[in-house]
Image (cartoon, rainbow, N blue to C red; front, side):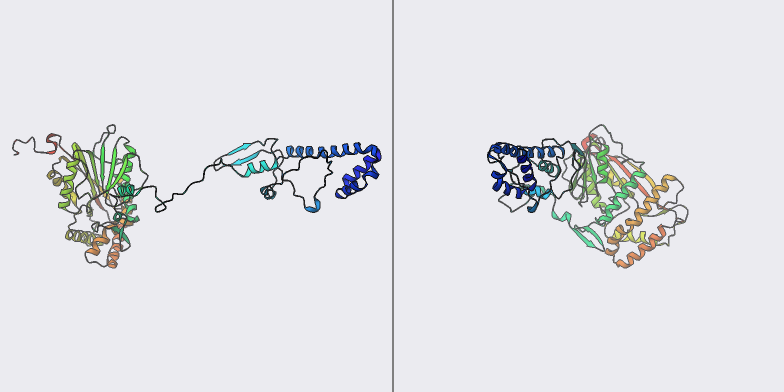
Length: 479
């Protein structure tokens, strides 16, 4: 019996050659009386091997086994009476994962996402392939395939009727521009200011200057913060004033109106924008608005006739007791100490600008006339507030120094050029001559020895309560 055990052990160590020897010489090595013992020993060898593999998997759950070559393939002695079922062929991805680095045994599997890590301990009864798949692939539940629409005529989520209704008030022209001398202008042909990026940056900087003048306020007209109000911002530009008002007054509903589409898409929920020409009849109902804000519209609303139409429409849509506020910068230089020369390039620019603008029917100095224009339109309680706005950081006062610094930057960066190009070239100036004049003008504006300033002017007016808009309803002499 000892001889049989010794021979069988040699056969197991011999591998494939031993199997051949066992098959041909087993009757010689093992006598008939020892056959049952040999088979029992072989069965024990076979049954012990899977258990050993399972134990190794439990202690090294995610280790990748080495794929044996054909010359190294082990041979198992099989007892035909007790042979286990053959193991399935390994999947293709198992072989591909064998090239991955092997993690340390007994470590938790780390599953990473974009924002956080969750540490999941590997269950002891999972196989190597299962653990590798869990580490690399996030398997989603089966979902039905997306079925393409048979009608591929449009990739939009809207029907033709929807698109037609949405674009009724947004004609394609509002997205088009006329390119002239390096600037883009509205296709209407009447705008003296461009609508390109330089102008949008200027408008945003100008809004900050207005806030400095008003110590952070957005208006001079008294408004209730706790009562819902409907507000219209005329000439909203980039929409920055309307957006700030929407943030500051959540109960208000603010509508910004402009002929150019320059406003952002993401705005407070109580703010919206409309594309319209404010010198034409408005679509708003009578007595439907609480407050109308008008800023920097001198030149855009050209002359007395357009201002009369505009103020008449504003008066119509305001509720009785509703208010209007109009503000603008003046475009003539002022000086109190004689440092501004009447023979300077700055004075030449100022005079030429107003001469050409006047020939075009454009009036910039509306502050000289608004008091009467408002009264002529029927408004009451007309008030005017004026602030000096330095050009440069020459004032001693800290607030005025800061305002002057930003105002100078605003004029040098884009203000002078954007107001000049259209008007001067329409007046017959060559673009090269305009650029030369602007260069001399900017050089003087940078000179801290020149103490010039302009004005910021505010007008406030109210639609009378009596007579629903007729300012003479209580006048006994009115017939």
